[in-house]
Length: 82
Image 1 (cartoon, helix red, strand yellow):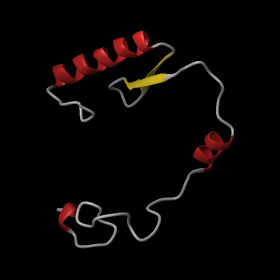
Image 2 (spheres, rainbow, N blue to C red; image 1 turned 120 degrees about the vertical axis):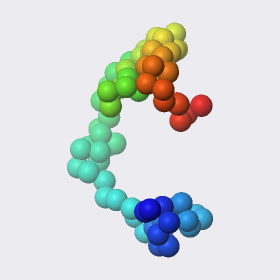
Image 3 (cartoon, rainbow, N blue to C red; image 1 turned 90 degrees about the vertical axis):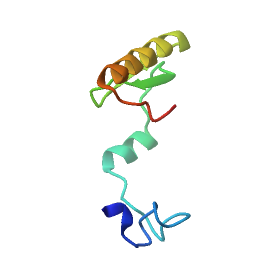
């Protein structure tokens, strides 16, 4: 229903970017961008609970991604990144 609304901010109906910002940055996101946490993680994958699994190596990441894909398969969902 909402996808059919003719409005310049409806990016499903309008090509290109909306005429202005669609949201404001939160204070925590600004702090994270200007003072990032130091860690050794290079990869992340969804964990199926709304969180993420962070990995230091590609091998760890691939295991986490496969675990998430198995969860989606059990739920009967499709991974939108494929």
